Image (cartoon, rainbow, N blue to C red; front, side, top):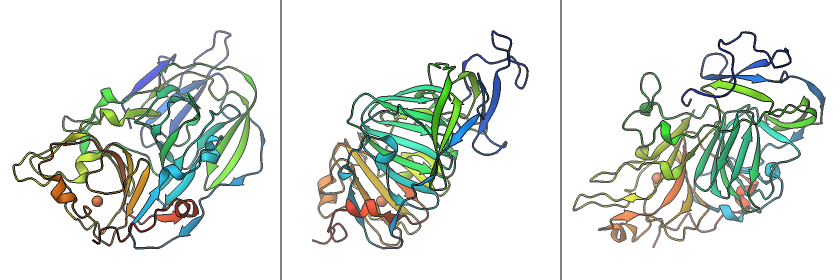
Length: 385
Ligand SMILES: [Fe+2]
């Protein structure tokens, strides 16, 4: 999906002999997430990425759905998710459907003993708290507060954190995560009206080539099961790669808000999309400048989508009792809008400092047991005075 990029050494022509200093051949791997009919990369490994030496018994990690159907406004205290040492164990799916899983995580420790590969889903990891380095077979991506890390499914990675205080908001997407189509030219360049451009997209940097033999465990998630697959060579043995399919970082702080004389609709905040859902970034911005403008959003009937808002930082103009890490879920079918008093309060306001990530799904989300554990009571009736 992003622009063409290359790192390390690659042969002059694809699919030709590319030799190591000792005369042996590097192993070429084509990497794509949609067969041979979409963006791809070619990676050159010291060893074929196929040498499995043994396998573990699979473990079921599928989310446990507690409420499959419902029609109520809900709110969840995301920071009540308990920190856990292990990265994978810390990931708690809270709202799920067949297109995406919304996951919260507060991992405390870096990954040293194993690697992770999500074979089902592209991942969008929004870093709410913490910093570190995402290590992948494509190289390294340093990350910090406000970064979206977008990782194509199948990418082998490790998260390395600077310390134990990390809060992540994750979307597992069962289709490729894309830039919105309307932002792109016919040939794929981000257009002038897009709220971000190629300069804001950070590709992997550094490509340490680890040519090591041993027992390397890649925990691989497929259809709700986690398979322990052991390989005889380090997975980060790539000497070079090029192409358009690779993990990248984009900071929410680099999203340039689009503003107007009157209230702008949510699509101006759109950042990414997948099949049947979109991701939007609500960033600090100047408010509408028509002299009679109402900066607070109008009530609206989202009849065909569930609206999930994850509150990151700043003031949240249209709601009361909002805290960092909170999720609100306004399901399709009943209208929602500003809380009582919020419209009057917004009049004449010049700017907002709100920072939030929205995920709108076009099919209903289901609530997991972890969601019910962190639910805030009395949200449904919080509009009634
Ligand atoms: Fe809404």
